[in-house]
Amino acid sequence: MNWHNKYPKEVPQSINYEDQTLHGLLKDTYEKSPSKNATYFFGKQMTYAELYQSSCKFANALMDAGLQKGDRVSIMLPNCPQAVIAYYGTLMAGGVVVQTNPLYVERELEHQLADSGAKFILCLDLLYSRVMTVKKNTNVEKVIVTAIKDYLPFPKSLIYPFIQKKNYGFKPEVEYNSTTVKFVSFLSQGKEKVPEVEVDPKEDLALLQYTGGTTGLAKGVMLTHRNLVANTTQCFHWMYHLNGKENRTLAALPFFHVYGMTVSMNLSIMTGSQMFIVPKFDPKEILQIIDKHKITIFPGAPTMYIGLINHPEIGKYNLSSIEACISGSSSLPAEVQVKFEELTGGKLVEGYGLTEASPVTHCNPIWGERRGGSIGLPWPDTEAVIFVEPGEVAKPGEVGELAVRAPQVMKGYWNRPEDTQATFYEDWLLTGDMGYMDEDGYFFIVDRKKDMIIAGGFNIYPREIEEVLFEHEAIQEAVIIGVPDPYRGETVKAFIVTKEGESVTDKELDKFCRARLAAYKVPRQYEFRKELPKTMVGKVLRRVLVEEEEQKMNEKKSS
Image (cartoon, rainbow, N blue to C red; front, side, top):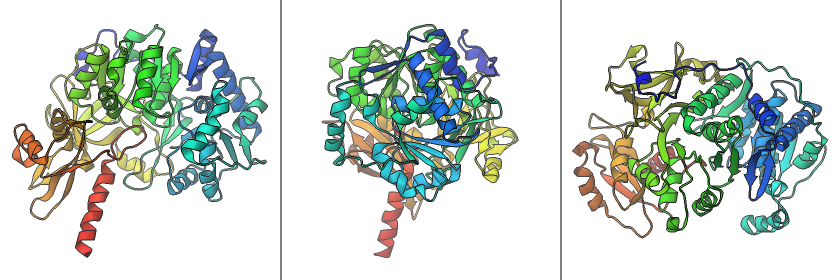
């Protein structure tokens, strides 16, 4: 593949993936470095020995409670040590993890639990009533409840319940019985012996990761141990400069999101790094952690880096410990990349992936040639093409649908053979993203296939317009959608969030865009907001904005 010519010499074109389970990564690190610190959570540290032993105990407790190999275990937690213990413990027991977003409302939660057939669920005490509301319509047999205070150091563990009551206005009332148990009690009942469960890394599932479901009911992506180990290993080789060093990873991306799970959690476990676990992204808190603990690796999303570089107190903190950051979940504006690197002295590069690929397939070289606006090169053992039509490969520079095949690509969708078949062309995974490849093998995403705007017969890609808007000094965030237009079919609308203390008018932005874009791409409408709807990982929910516009149109028609 011609992109291999652009690989740094330290990155192999192909990797020999050992026949290893995902929980085998934890076992290896524990055996090499049992006394190293694995996690840091509001001042409390846990060594790799403690993490491994706790995971073994959780695994044995699950099996004693009736878990059979292949049974699904839902983990509905923000980032906390319990989430890591339960994740690896479930895998040790031969179970399949179902990562469940703590923000799910009852409808979403019930669908995921019922669809996956989860037998156990581990949830936060604050979420207990939500779980119990839907439990009767699912296969859940046992609810395991934990609290943030369970892994806080003294005296924070005593103070936290009062803070929780102040912030959330109530004290969670949990009714413990034979089917609802405390996490700490459940864990204490488990034996420390290593569970003896035969797991086939190539065939057995490690994870059911549900897609966002923004265009219908969420689908469970079936990822095997091999899929996830392969992607973690590829990431390890891509970040070659950090191998063998004492790294400290800022785990601010949610573990229940496949990107945070792979690049923050699994990679840290593989390399024996210490994870500084953050349950909720707060720019000031993040700046303090980087400064105090000399963070070296910070995987994130563009909105996180935007939040930091625009924080009014950023000058008070030393961020020079940062060495490498891979940005994912949405496109990284060039201005953000430049500013962040100026502030830290580290490297920030854009990568690309999707849940169905564990998730990373492409990334710009961290210490090599990168290209502005590009998602970079395919990772080792990852083949990528641009299809004009399925089977018809595009020429360099020609736009089509990105397709990939690689060891990290999913087994399929859970109980959805028709959807699985529709997502593949032969053994190529069709990503749904429109893009092109240049002459040297660098790939560029022009937009989601479904997000493309067709106005007056012209194809318009929102990302291109967003990149231009991000260049304006007053703009902090921008997102583009297509709205119905009686003449053009669709027209371009921009949603804008300005930086604190800055202002700009739609007329000024119109002039700014006309100097940089063809006339048919220039937004015809602007809407200024204080914030944009986002997922937990910071990805702007473009679909929510589209639905809001559709509702406005329907109300206008009916009035």
